[in-house]
Image (cartoon, rainbow, N blue to C red; front, side, top):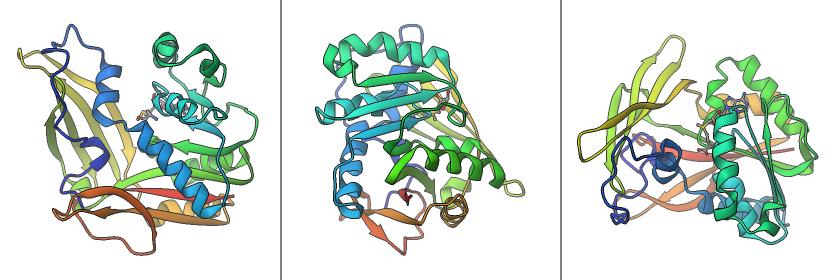
Length: 283
Ligand SMILES: C[S@@+](CC[C@H](N)C(=O)[O-])C[C@H]1O[C@@H](n2cnc3c(N)ncnc32)[C@H](O)[C@@H]1O
C-alpha cells in the first residue's frame, strides 16, 4: 500500500503542464482542489462494482452529501444516461461555482438530471435514492459519536429499501503524525498539511495549501477540523444507526507496494503507513 498518509490526496505526479505556469492570483482554489484530490470517475466505477457485488443490480439514483464542486454528481450523471444525482452542500459559494460550470460540463439533458441543494446534509429532504455517498472524509467533521450516529441515521433514511451508503475513510500510522507532504501537479504544488493531532480528543486540524513556481502561494486554501475516526468505530456507529451490515473495500497493491486502484471486500487490512478504504453500509 502507499507510503503517504492519504492516498486519494496523492494523485499521480505525471500530469503534463498543459496550461503553463500558474500563479496564486490566476488560480481558482476549487479547480486546484479538483485536480489535486478528486477522482470522480473512479468513484462511479466503484459504485457500479459494489452494487453488482452486493445487490446484483444497477445503482441509478445517487445523493452526494458534502458535494462541494459536485464533481462526483456530474461524473455520475455522465456515467450512464439513466443516472440522476442530488448534491447537497452548506456552502452557497461552492454551489454557485458548480452551477456556473454546468454549461461546460453537462449537456442540457444531463443538467436536467442534476439537482443541487444548499443546506445541511442533516436537514435537506430529498426523494429516496439508491446510494448516499459521503466522500473525501467529509463526515470526519462530525466529532462526537452522537453527532456521527445522528448523521448516519439520516443518511439511512434517504435510502430505498435495498439502498447502500458509501463513504470513504483514511488511516495508517502516518495519519496520526503532524507532517506535510507535497506533490507537484499541473503548474502548481499541492500541500497536504496535517497541522495538529491531539491524541486525547482524537481531533486533527488539516490544511490544503497551494504553491506556485513564481513563489506565490495560497495558504490554508482549505481547512479541516476533523475527528480521526478509525474503521472499527465507524463500522460500529453505522450499525448503531440501524444499518444491517457494513462491508469494507480495501485496495490491492502493485509490485512496488503502491495502491493499484483495485478494490475488494476484506475482513483484514494491512498495517501500512497510509491507506484509504471505502465502507459500504447496507440498509
Ligand atoms: C472536504 S469537502 C468535500 C468535497 C467533496 N465531497 C469531495 O469529495 O472532495 C467538504 C464539503 O462539505 C461541506 N459541508 C460541511 N459541513 C456540511 C454540512 N453539515 N452539510 C452540508 N455540507 C457541509 C463544505 O461546505 C465542503 O464543501
